Image (cartoon, one colour):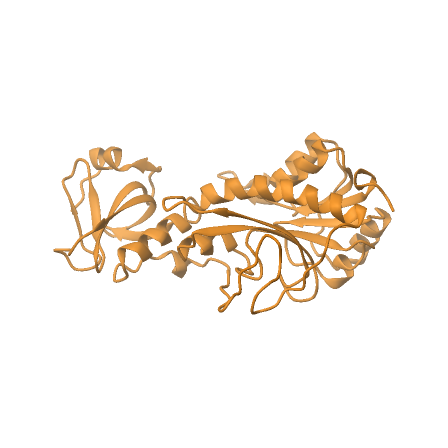
Length: 320
């Protein structure tokens, strides 16, 4: 059996969230024999080719990089086999075909941003905040056929503050996930880790011992998810705003233009306006009515404008 820092590791990831985990492994002296990330894609105003955050980091560290268009491509499969990985790590990547995830002898480990089996899917951080959860966490688990259903390795939970945004939870989770990943690798290598089978009624684990009555899912966020329904309660709208902040952002319309909302405050009262109607003093506040109060906007972005705080926005825009 190899020591954990002798394991041949292939790392798969694309966005900034994954960089924290890759950096943790590099700083710990792990043997990263290859990094798999998304192909460069046109973006920005000039539509120049953009490198993923993981690729930028891998270049800085002189790591071997592969950017397959298709994960079942025979040439890529041969390149992957040639790396002779003992274990593969997946953090914020795409779905892997079995020929890929089943390749290394120690399996493929995924870092997932929820306390599985809750919030399986593409957007676990967003949905935990949108649903008003008081707690979330991170899970390391082994990939198998169905998405996010493999055996749990380790978990760690943390509290979500009442006013925290998805972005703030994301930043806390990426560090926690990186630490948990290294701990997972160390225990996997020395044979002390205990795999726990996921069930749909609960998971018996030292860090997560709650019986689950109803599974909550974390599907991809679509445009219609972000469109605010002001006929809902203040709490529901407030949670939606912070659960989609800073990206992709909840939105409504103001004077016929799309208005993205990033930060807000709750005002619980009997509203004098119908849901969706708004009032402002044109100087310091803009608030929209819900069924049981108002949402007072604190940070926003009008279509075609930059993001700004409410006072700056009202100074330069006449609301009518």
